[in-house]
Picture 1 (tube, helix red, strand yellow):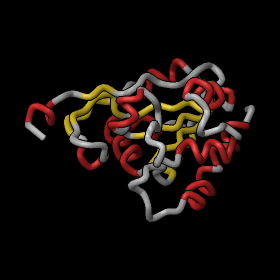
Picture 2 (cartoon, helix red, strand yellow; picture 1 turned 120 degrees about the horizontal axis):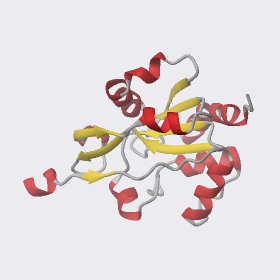
Picture 3 (cartoon, helix red, strand yellow; picture 1 turned 180 degrees about the vertical axis):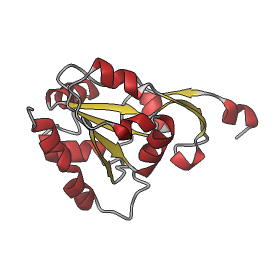
Picture 4 (cartoon, helix red, strand yellow; picture 1 turned 60 degrees about the horizontal axis):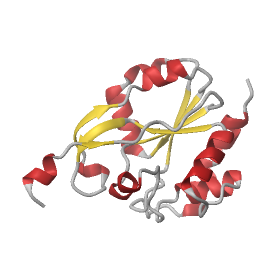
Length: 175
């Protein structure tokens, strides 16, 4: 890969959110395949949609538009901490020159979001760096969940599902 390729600035995806959202799933930055497809968790090896299928009955093989409509019905929003970066490949460890998404603005625009599920350690570490005010709020719960990435192979999908099941109760909380 040439230096020109490395310096190309990649732009993430817009937030998947609406007024029903109660839980915000925050990743770090979309994979190369997700950016190409313009789909959150577009790599079929990523466990995200498999977990959403198990928790909410969202068919992971359904068209993306159907899956995103269903996840919003379940009061789950999806976005990434990083808005733009340079990166070779898809690994979080290769992210350079990151600029953040405005998480505070999103939470202001959608005040019913009461929980943040960080999809892996990079998402949490990056949020702590770019948006430390999130962690000082009394009205916002947060938790680091195991990454759904296929690179996180040391944890089985079943173990991931057990931990990720916490977002179901957050989304169902009507308070």
